[in-house]
Length: 318
Image 1 (tube, rainbow, N blue to C red):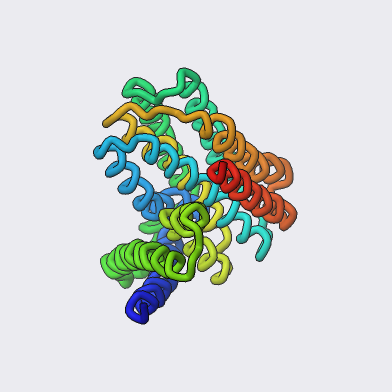
Image 2: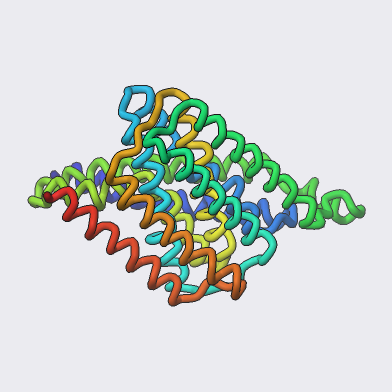
């Protein structure tokens, strides 16, 4: 058991240090390219932190566990919004970039609506997956169009060119990859050994599945968000969560469903979808109106997430 605890601690160190390196390299990219942090969060950060969800869902779909693929993606959206961004808003409320936030929030809401409409027949098949992939293309185009508006000055004058030449972008890219790998490995060590420790001290399997396992694939988003606000780069956090949530629908679910049809269980329709919708609305509607994420929003999102765990727990207990 001492060895297991040691691995658990190593996992914690890896994920926290990895997040530190990951966010620092992201900040460096933003400074050198003048790309807004919320755009970076919605693009390269969200793509990197969503990788665990994609690999888990893809493997589950290949093995025929298609309901796990959908549950992993929807559960991640709920955890990302309710827990990760809820904590961020409680710790440090902040203003958002109106144009970028509104465009990402709109795409997220549209993606959710499309997913629910496609799932009215209780299955996401290959045709539905292709429709969601179409939204993925739209999302990528939207990100691409956001970049020119940042007024990049990489070659605008001699001094700028000298600055660019002095930057070792290869090193920044290497550190970015190292950071995300450390977070993914750290996540697995935390989850796998956390389960063993929980079982050893007598924690019920149901509770374990709703806490340690549920947080597993969302740990990169959670830790990177908390690290970003610690370094006072809040926009990376909200961009990361918006981007990751969109990608969970248009890439994770679509790619998994393209391999095998994904059935939508009754629990998903009456519990998971409604909680996902409520959390996204708490995040997006007040922020679009006020152009700021408030502490009260964070409290409401976190309480909604805890209520979700409570409802799921008693649903499975029955």
